[in-house]
Amino acid sequence: MTTHNNQAMGHWIDGREVPSSGNAVLETLNPLDDSLYGTVVRGTVADIDNAVESAHAAFLSYSQSSTNDREAWLCKAAELLEKQKGQFIEILHSEGGSTLKKAEFETNKAISFIRASVGMVRNLSGKTLPSDYPGRISMTWREARGVVAVITPFNVPLIKASRLCANALATGSTVVLLPSEEHPILSLKFAQLMSEAGFPAGALNVVAGNGYDIGDALTGHPLVKSVTFTGSTVVGKHIQKLCAENNKHVTLELGGKNPLVIMDDADLQEAVPGAIRGIFMHQGQACIGSSRVYVHDKIYDQFVKMYVAIAGKLGMGDLRDPDTIIGPIISERQRERIKRHIEDARNKGATVATGGNWDGNRCAPTVLLDVTADMDVFREETFGPVVSVYRFSDFDEVVAEANNTNYGLSSAIYTANIHLAMRFAKRIEAGMVHINSPSITDEAHVPFGGVGDSGFGREGTEADLDAFTDLKWVTIQA
Ligand code: NAD
Image (cartoon, rainbow, N blue to C red; front, side):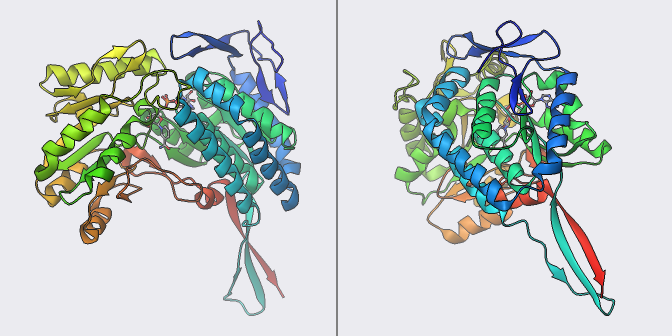
């Protein structure tokens, strides 16, 4: 890419890299040591207007593009991402602090999500309906909504950009993507790839900048017809209000404090590594991470011994080493919250079974025992490699405890008793429930999302058909 504004990388608008209308820049730092990774322009409200107008102008012809063309562009995008995987993995390492395991997982998921979106192209169907009026032919059509605003978080920027942009583009809608200010270069590179894949100018636009300054200009823009936001609950609720005032469709994928229950008949050879994977992937920076683990009294001591032994030895070496599990925490803001949660728990009497210490910007895997309701970590999302392990003896009691949260994203239970597992699945207040695997998992076509403070609506190939299209009722009086 070429550079503008003091060598800063520009926005991607109307099929090309463009400078900002302002002079400010955003520096993106390598989370390992906070050294400068790259510089991008810092978008202004005028840049948002420019991107939305480009997406709106493109919509007129893009929404009429043939199914063959949209399929071919999406197929090509998946093929290019497969070919350029190494470059995306490098950005995930250096801009996001991802380990090789996480970066490979994310790029593979992104390829899978783009491939799955191809199926949406021919699924934009309506139906014929009976009518109260003799002779009337009555039917529904699905029509692309128009400009979709996609707002993504720092932790899985490629998963979110690929899924949501591909799904919106599959329906014939056009997109303005506002990526996290912590990880913009990845999304600018993704826009370039989509352009190489053949998507016409204006179909996908990316504005680099800080959502706190320019986000309202995007979500409140009259030409934006649908908003899909992934991020914190506090920002999500603000966006929901703005969308309500402007009467536009919104999907919110927000935070989580996900429970994982381990019954006394669980296979610990499966449950322990599951609970490890559940929280420590991407050093705990995952909305669906299993940050609350409830273990039955009868196996509690054995579980804690095995769990702590593995957690204490998770690799914290070179990010490019496949054995490294724990990378750095992305920013000072995130690190401060994690430190506050650990210190607050320690001061109020929690036992730190392992971890609690830092190596540079990396927080060692931290297992807390004896956590009580007055501690911040009990209720708030930590978004770091910190897990609370609780003891229980009664199924009803553990279901009540697992539901004692404002969040309701994902959940999990390990047990050999399928009846109990199904009772848990029925009674847990969460959008997703996994039996004998951790709370952390996702697939392209499933309804991904949560209830309560975890969100509103679902994403995935089926859910996004509704998010990015409108149904029109059409009649012919014959
Ligand atoms: P964040 O809310 O701070 O930021 C997310 C995005 O919103 C960023 O791009 C930011 O610039 C933008 N933003 C900020 N103010 C805005 C405004 N007024 N209007 C529009 N956009 C605005 O979240 P984060 O720290 O980047 O991500 C971590 C959070 O995301 C965690 O709470 C995590 O659980 C959640 N998350 C949820 C999911 C899910 O699918 N449910 C997935 C990943 C992350």
